[in-house]
Image (cartoon, rainbow, N blue to C red; front, side, top):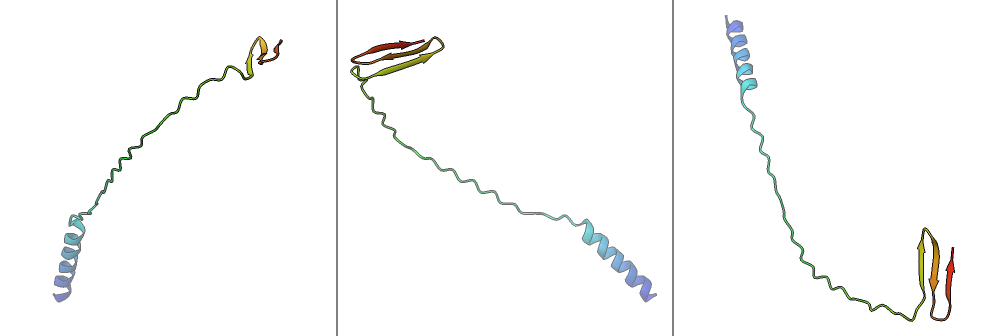
Length: 72
């Protein structure tokens, strides 16, 4: 009789332990970082005295202070 009682008690204990809700604690940490950066853009004046090269589908156009050349 003791074996049957112990067996039933063990089975009951296992059933209660397996049906118990397991609560998992999850912690989410969200860090927000704001970076403020001031950007200073300097405008560079265009120099008309230099050499300019223009390349397109029609050919190459080179304009210089001394010489004007067009290559097609």
